[in-house]
Structures are given as C-alpha cells and as structure tokens.
Image (tube, rainbow, N blue to C red; front, top):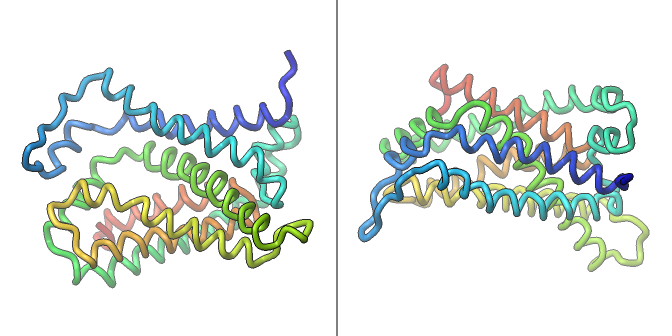
Length: 264
C-alpha cells in the first residue's frame, strides 16, 4: 500500500521523536528517586522494568498529537521541517539540511550563552541546596537523553506542534481575511511557546526541591524561555531542523560549561 506524503512525514517525525522518548529508559530512575526529597505520606515506587516502559506511554501519546498537529497545520502557516519533508517526498535531504546547520550552530551558541548568563545572575539568589540538587540532576541525565529528548522530542512538541498551532490560531482568529499569517502572528507565537517551554520545566523543580522560591521560578522560566525565543525564531525563518541543531548544541554548551564550573 502506497503511503501518502503526509503519512510518511508523520512517521518520519514521530520516529525521530520516539528516539528521544525511548532514551528516557537510559535515566537511572533509582538515583533520581533518591534525589527527590521525600514528601509526608508518600512512598517512592519500586522501579521495575515494567514501570519504566509504562512511563513512556504518556510522552508517546503527547508526541503523536504534536506531530499530527504540525503535519496538518505547518504548511498552512508557512512553517516547515525541510529535511523531514524532503525524506517524505524522496527529495534531497542532505541538500536542504546544509542551509540549516550554520544558523542552528549560531543559535545553539547564543542559546547556551544566554542560559549561562542568566544562571550566573541568579546564582547568588539561589540556595546552596538548590544549586547542589540541580548539579546532581545534571550528572544523572545521560547525554543521549539530553540530545535526543531535549534536542529532538522537545522541539517536535514545542515548536512543530505547539508553536505551529498558536500561529494558526492567531491567524484564524485575528487575521482570517489574510491568505497567510503576518509577522505579528509569528512573533506572538514565539513568545507564547517560549513562555510555555519555560513553565514546562517547573514541575521538575517542584519535584526536585524541598522549597521552590520565587528566584527558582524566575530562573527556570527565564532561562528556558530565552532559548525558546532562539529556537522559535530559527523554526520560523529556517525550519525545524535548524531549531533541533540549536537545541542539541545548547545542551553541549551547557555540559561543557558545567565541567568548567560556569554552570550547574
């Protein structure tokens, strides 16, 4: 049976995102549970292979929804995933990837620098225990998980899925008389998706820290939102793969800065 281009595009992007979801299995959940402070009246679950596999179901379902939204709406608002689309149409994937690499690298360096600068500004406001727990969390997260889940899966969720949807909603609600959304729709969508990206990192802070202060909340939102703006701009102007390259490189920059003592 011959698959449609949209179906092939969905399968390509979903498959790429699932690499990140499956990489969650590489996390030492026992070490992670030790790091999470005990809550009164709660008991840490026993980590079994079945529990680890079951933990993949929710992110897999959310990923499928995000990829489907992007496949259905991205082309309507002039957003794209050039490499995946080239693969889906059996085009020249390498040729369309090349123009995305340099902007992605520049974006990754800028994103990493922004997060490091924000962390240095907030470090005096954070409690020593907070800094220690964040540092220990960084040592628990495997590099493949950082690159695949952070770099690929999160971009599919926040840019390909959510940002695309926000652009489409703004366009249909505010500019329905126009054939395509204008710059204001994209800028607004970048800001909204970046803020959501920042807020989306708060649950781990609440789970990890015995006390979440205003400084912690502001740091988490600002640091992640700063990168979100970079990734959103790249997705808008260059394509999804450029944002993916930037996200991966940002993790590499932060990892290097951590070993150098300039980051958690």
